[in-house]
Figure 1 (cartoon, helix red, strand yellow):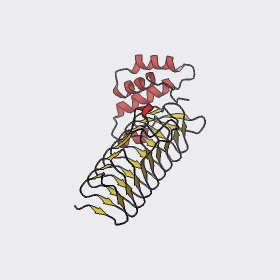
Figure 2 (figure 1 turned 30 degrees about the vertical axis):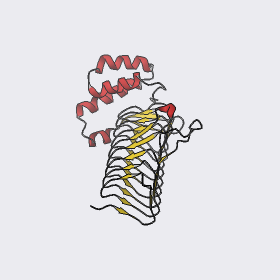
Figure 3 (figure 1 turned 30 degrees about the horizontal axis):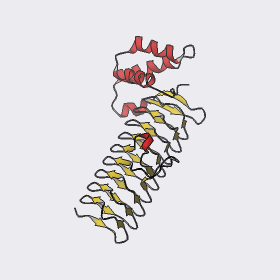
Figure 4 (figure 1 turned 90 degrees about the vertical axis):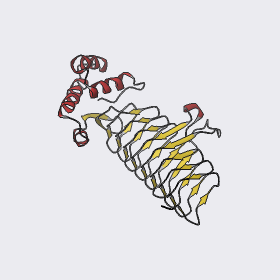
Length: 261
C-alpha cells in the first residue's frame, strides 16, 4: 500500500512517515513526529512535535494531537505523547503531551475509540480498549485502565484513577477514584451503582466472578460500616478471588479516596 499525502498537507522533512499512510487536506505533521504504518490522518488535523503514533490509527478530522500542555508551569520543555495502535480519534479530539513535573509523558494504549471532542490532558495514561463518548474529558495526571467506558460529557479530576472495566455514565464528574468493574454515575456528588453486570457478562466474566463482585458491593455499600471496616470484611470473606483482590488493591492504593455512595 502506497503512502498518500494530499498536496495541501504540510509534512515537516524531519517527520517519519510509515508505509501506507494517508494524510488529508490541510493537515500538518510537525518535526520529530513518528507516524506508524497504515495510519489515516483526515483533513485539518495537527500532529505536533514530540508525538509518536503506532500503526493503524485513524484521525477523522480537526484533531489536535500532541499540542503543548495547558499548564502555566510549562516552558517549552521537550515532552512526549505516545499512542499505541489501532485507535480511532473522531472529530475535534484533543490530546496534550506531558509536562516535566508530571513525568514528561502522556500515553494512549491500543484499540480505543475516542468520540468527538474528547480531551486528554497532560501526563494522563489511558489503557487499551477504552471508549470515550462525546466530550469525555480527563484533567492532568489521570490514569484510566483497560476496558473503561467514559460516558458523554463526563469529566475526571486531576490525579484521579479509573479502574479496569469501570463504566462512567453520562455527565458524571469524578473527583475521586472510580472503582473497577462498577458503574458510577452522577454530577455532584457522583454515586457508584455496583457491578456493570451487562458489560462484564459481554466481556466474558464468569458467573462466579460476577457473584463475588456483587457480594463485594453489598458489603462495601453497607451504611453501618466505614469503608475501612468493609474492606476488612471483604478481605476475610472474599479474599483470594482475582477480581475481588484487584478492587481491594485499588482501594488501598487510592490517594483521593474512592466513589462508593
